[in-house]
Image 1 (cartoon, rainbow, N blue to C red):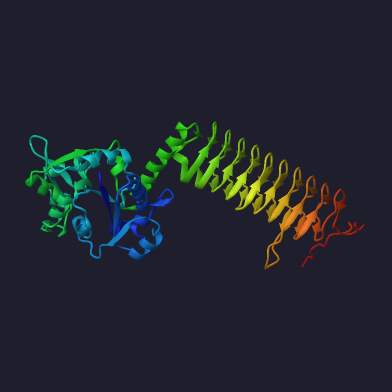
Image 2 (image 1 turned 180 degrees about the horizontal axis):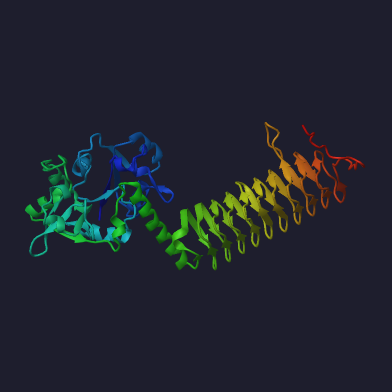
Length: 456
């Protein structure tokens, strides 16, 4: 079946109370419109057109990577008027699917049931039964159950407002019918707008049957009009992602307090994730990984058997197998931590390599550094990598022992099995297998007394 898709995305979204166009507000990691585009792309249509309006330049700049035909609706005069903007370019032989840029959770299975209903003598309409249909257009049927029209909330009679079946606005229709009916739309209604839903009554008059399908879950067709609705759909979206993870063997201590704002490219067995963990970008997680509460992991790879203790931030890093990170550690981009490494509390690592078996356990900053195997870095160690203009590298070779409260002023190399005494400031290379100190002589002054305040 030849298919083209029209996405209506011109609404202002005044109830969002935002300078950002509504369709650019994010669900998960992507703008609302991009979720709809992703669904449309999976259907492999011949063409996707997006009708945009408010915030046009910002929309085009943000979503210029989408493979669509952008069509501007300069005046927002209703959904029918929006589709009129592409009427001349619609192929009469194709099926046209109408979607909405602020309805991000529509399922592919639902749409694939709808599309075949568009035939020469019928059209397909997606409806849903809601316990509270306020604000939605009602689906009016005759005594035999056939759809005869859609009536909007403001134009409905008291009896029509009692109807629970509502129009989602999502429909599949042959291009020939759509072009004909668009030319007959009028705006004689309370809003003085051209309603796309009026084509339903036209279809009935012309003897074209209106066949309906409903989604498996009503949340699929919920739109976003304000921030409360956006927050609700965010939790619906995250719940689905959490369910998918749990089906793949991941233990989530509380699925309602988990956020995936990106893509888990792979996940191993027996992974445990505590509350308030946020995964962003592209993340890989190996087997037997444990992630503590309140961690943020972005664009990183977590190896087998890794334990990430609470309150850690890991971005753009690789964590090798059986390593332990945290609590309260920050691992910054371009960091590679190899196997059986310990990075402890209040340690920051940036653009560095820490080789197998090494430990940086307390209150340290490691930047632009290569640390070899089985190195022990004492508490309060700082690699002084920035001279105010340029970054320089520190190299700590295998087996070195760095005493607490040490400053390593880069560029500098600490030799194999070297020992650096606590409190040292190292500005020159330290030889291997030797103790290097930088410490003033300790002096005790006998008979010294503390000053005392004089009485007035």
